Length: 79
Image (tube, rainbow, N blue to C red; front, side, top):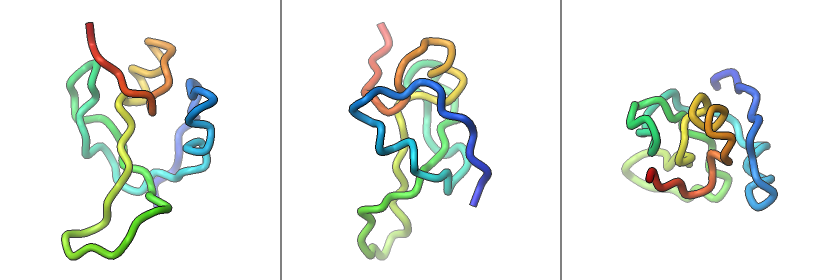
């Protein structure tokens, strides 16, 4: 397991995601900066699947969430 970073911006709707742990480093694209910097988090609702583990990926990477002061788990659309 990868050491978790401090999650600063998280909305009340996604409060439960605060307890998820990072399981996969930087596998998804950030919807703001378009860089592959979004970590995969554990999925407590995961079921067996022949294709591998299904990680949960937030919309924003940690640096963009901090810069924009937005919840990284909320759906983000760049304007």
